[in-house]
Length: 340
Image (cartoon, rainbow, N blue to C red):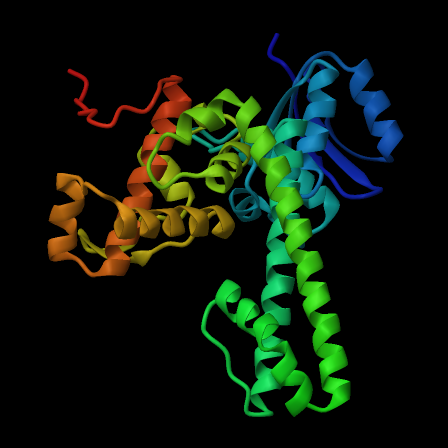
């Protein structure tokens, strides 16, 4: 007998479950509370539970999987076309149930606790970096109103401010000087917190074999390696490196009709944070590579710098996927061959 397929729409307190009874053929669409849902699924025979990859979905995937069910996560954009009427919990649960049974439907890999925790550290660091940048930009703008300018760059600018503090105390109003000192103290606190988070991220990188493996790829450092492994989950969810690059939005947007396909700028789908890290890593390789590869030299001769950076980021993503999916190590002079 085939396993029962469930469509589950999750929220904070109310959960809607849609399924078809295998024995009677009766359609059921029930609402549950949190504990009621866990108890109900624990008593049911092992089946397939599909839910949208939204907030708390990965926790629910681990919880339901521990009860013996197969869990399938679907992207929200693949569910919406199957909502037949107004958007309600019942309609969403039915749409999830319908979507998961479509041939070739793409799924999202469920993340482990460690992967979710690592992404949380990245999000915290990203927010602190944003706060630090805002504080420095405000500091520059306010001092510029008094005719004071500093060198470009975060480190160089802050160093110059500290070196010229005696001069600023003589030329600026006392109230501004006091607030300047407080703002510098806040910036120092942000930098200390960012450094602590980066140390914890680095510790996870050292203990994860997958992170160490892709860190050998030029342009992939501590932040990119940990963010990539934590975001991907299971690399085998993607059928190829090309599909993984498309998931990250590092491929051209396609627009075609009448048999003609036009390629535009990159699609920018997927996680913008991970895409940004890969592109910044590619720029670092382009600027600091001591011995550029033949591929890099060839594309730099015929394409603008930004296009080259995105192309290299695409190549880095595909190499990282191959290492993770096939559990291999990075080879500098590897030459790929199409299977016979």
